Image (cartoon, rainbow, N blue to C red; front, side, top):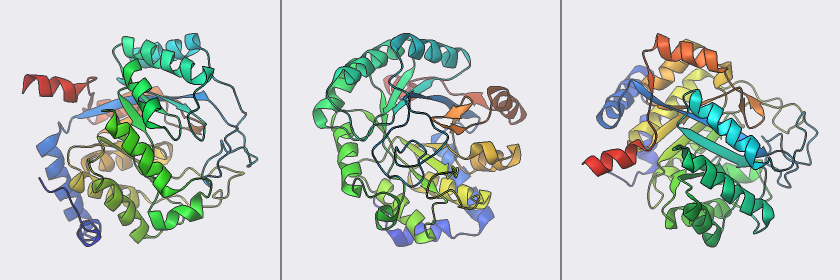
Length: 324
């Protein structure tokens, strides 16, 4: 299977006539995935706000005046209760996010390791997003039972410095390398609607698709502008742009789970159906995505019923490898 893609090739896919792009993506999607199956994930903020970074989209940055109130790390019982509720509601992946710049080797990290062990024991795929990570910290998470680690590239390398100045693009790539070196599943994608050009979107996809090993999971987020952040005035991302990103990601990263992530709350059933048709096969369930709103559980159940979609089982890749 082709692995190295040029920006020119990716650009040609992205700019295909809309129906042709969706058709090609849907065809590839069916070759590698069950089109009636979508993974349901839950994302919980285990430590909220007070982050020293300056990501222009993020309401958790301490320097911006937003609605987000800072909270210290949740305790183990709260996290286990939320994970159990998520599992009962149909989620098979539970992601814990902490508003840290990087992981520090302290008592809080020890608590997170315990949370990973606890949620893993429920039989869920455990994912964390905790900022930058060293090789040793990645190994500790792996030993605790971590299945996946999320660390988004956000945008192209060229546009990155317009969005974040407190860490470099290379810092992000280094974290992804540390995750990969410790045999943890990589979850990495980006956000559109941050004032980037189409070339920036293609650049982001180019970087992701040409990593030494492609990510197993690629979240495609539409910016949810939050009052108090530098990007509060950004217009809503057209659904056509989301579909083009999802479809192009599906064509160049055929085996990845392409996650229809932030911004879904502003999309109709019809718009979400287009995204699934174009190759998205994962959503986040629950009323919040860290600190931004998300469709409620009953709406997602109605969506799945309308489209005859069923939730994907946990650890499906591992099970299919064992039976191969």
